[in-house]
Image (cartoon, rainbow, N blue to C red; front, side, top):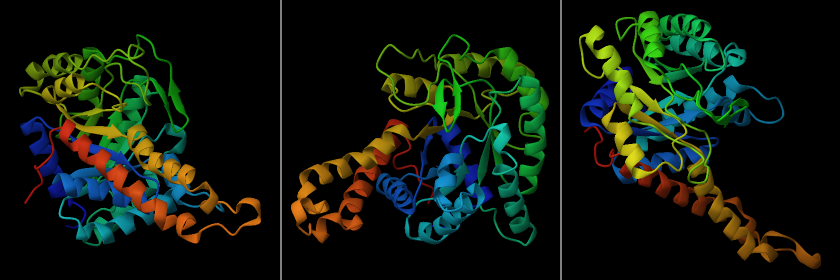
Amino acid sequence: MPIASPEIYNEMLDRAKAGKFAYPAINVTSTQTLHAALRGFAEAESDGIVQISTGGAEFLGGQYDKDMVSGAVALAEFAHVVAKKYPVNIALHTDHCPKDKLDGYVRPLLAVSQERVASGQNPLFQSHMWDGSAETLDDNLRIAQELLAEAVKAKIILEVEITPTGGEEDGVSHEINDELYTTVADVERTAEALGLGEKGRYLLAASFGNVHGVYKPGNVVLRPELLRQLQDGIAAKAGKTDPFDFVFHGGSGSSEQEILTALENGVVKMNLDTDTQYAFTRPIADHMFRNYDGVLKVDGEVGNKKTYDPRSWGKVAEKSMAERVTQACANLRSTGTKLK
């Protein structure tokens, strides 16, 4: 199937919300990790989300002349071509973008999609994320209002992060402390500034103790039940139940019960990066250790081309990452839910 249209993406999110499941959002940094994500979704018979961070986009742009926009556009265009052979719907998303990178990433990409829509095409990406968690909430929401208006012109959904997620993600870091919990007052101000759909659809990355990366048990205290308080705190004023489409950041290493509680409380998207990075790299390390005398020209020998050919270790890396994506679909209850 082709990359999801705006209408299909909205339907995907609506079905996830109604069915209390979520889509894994898989960070990719290459055409091979893209194929691994697509393969995992296809094998799980689940639609899904593929996303590119600012660091991932810069890496994709090449090390000779680093450029986030060309890297993101190039992979998105590639995805539009190859996704057609996978029997699932895929939305393309850009991950965390802080204030100092908006002009070099999200704003130019919004312009690209606005031009496409004006010419009768679908947008290049289906959603973009604004990470204003390092700003004051007033400044965060002021910028979010501007970006949401531009996103609407491009038929794109905006994702906003209104309060900090702990740990580090592409240079944006927050301490792990008691401030990593969004309050009802925070989401009230968000609803006042951005509306609840009438000004454009947005996804909300609220904080309930989330931390980027993987930590040992006991280091992170997740409170996914907090999402219910946030939903109910706005529901009466909004005149509808579960007014927010929540995003689960820092999901790698979460327990099954934490994930299920989050799904019951309105999470429709959960980011995975750390776990899939490891799943991709682990078999490569195994291949190199097992075949060190083939991948290296040891003691003047010539090595073994079959073992240092990138395809030899790339195939097992793709398979391993795809399996982790399929596992994520099962954990998030999206397995077998693809749109027909």
